[in-house]
Amino acid sequence: MTAITTDLQAQKVAIEKFLETKALEGFPSNLYDAVHHIMTLDGKRLRPMMVLTCAGAYGIPEDKAMSAAISIEVFHNFTLVHDDIMDKAKIRRGKITVHEKYGIDKAIVTGDAMLPHSVDLLIHGNEEKAGTLLNCFNQMAKEVMEGQQYDMEFEDRKDVKVDEYLNMIKLKTSVLFGSACEIGAVLGGASEADRKNLYDFGLYSGLAFQIMDDYLDTFGDENFGKRIGGDILLNKKSFLLVSAMQNANAEQKVRIETLFNEKDEEKKIASFQALYREMDIPKIALDTMEEFHDKSVNAVKATSLTDDAKERIIQLGEVMLKRTK
Image (cartoon, rainbow, N blue to C red):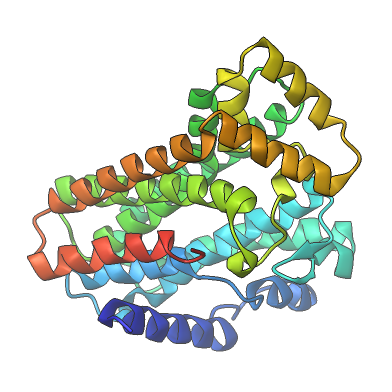
């Protein structure tokens, strides 16, 4: 086990402890059961780890950065509560979703309450940096909402281009990783240049993370943690599908359209996998993921941090991509 893996495991233990003991203090009591349900589901906790790791690179102790780190996790889970309602999802991380367990009305209000609570956590103990932290947070929050709307709009479109898809996942997913890293840098008193570079590290890491997630959904193995081919069965606009639709010839476009309506689930998955391989889509996805990963590494190398601190942050990005291989 590598040193970074050991450190991240210790971070996750500390994050889980804070979630159970302090993170939900002051949350509306009549919504506590619902928020506790979503916040204690097993998760990777990558976003708070990014805050802690980037703050730690500037010498900020874990306990001083923990509240801000958890604010990012609360915000992330707030979006999941509402996403699950929009998607009519019944299961989240192997457990029943909030709206299925507590009803749609309570789930909506719980998500609403999680947003201001995340802001309270962000500035708790960091009041002297509140203005800068809130500027980072609010810009991220607006972009995440914009990305979610694009994602919903794409459901009914058959002409989504790869560039549009990348912009959507940048907004919906990657800016939250970028903001987590920048917030850690702000806590550490980093320069404007370092803040920008660490934001870019998180942004590019998030893009690589999502493309790898799309790839593994179709070409992963039993260790992936969810059914292989789930995106295919939903006709979900993944990087693979959008790339295939954009690059397909006339005959391949007809096959894609036909497969959208295929009722035999195993046949549908196998047929899409075969078509993707025929079009070299797996290589395109992995090459694109590597390009973003390389950009994330270069962003860290451009900071003024020590070589050891740079290496720890770079290793965190690599752990993100190896999570399900």
